[in-house]
Image 1: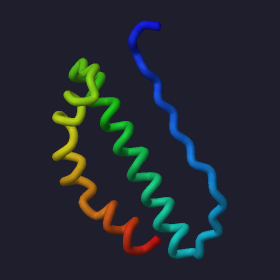
Image 2: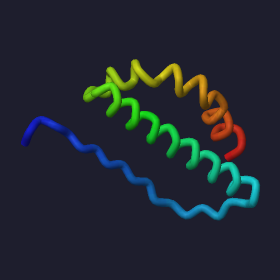
Image 3: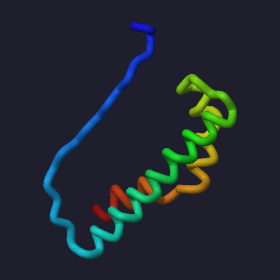
Length: 77
């Protein structure tokens, strides 16, 4: 083993959201996809290989760009 670690997480559940919840979930998943793509892009462009350095590089920017995401999850769903 080369010392690298691959972590895969999965959560399977059945959800039948109402229309409002469906819209919120679609917006949430879209925002999450944008966040992941942004993090990957930043990591590649800055040649970042550690989670700590990536966190330091993107955390405050993500919090500024997506301030309401966690609030929406806790209140609406």
